[in-house]
Length: 73
Image (cartoon, rainbow, N blue to C red):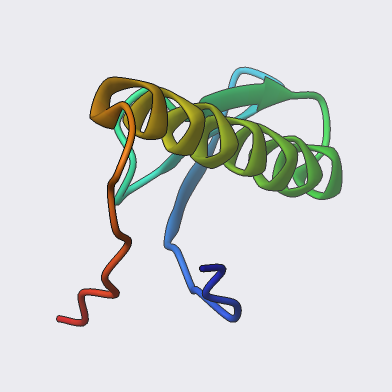
């Protein structure tokens, strides 16, 4: 099951010529770029990769005969 249209929060700041950002809801997703635009694109790509990795890891850990259930907050 794929759930689309998820929104995440980017925490960003400029520090000594670099733009630094984190995705608030997903630990470990952070990037650093020379421009705000590049930072936001890097955060999107890194978030997408992290979510795909986490999905594959969870499915692998579950083994056979699992189900997927959406959880809304």
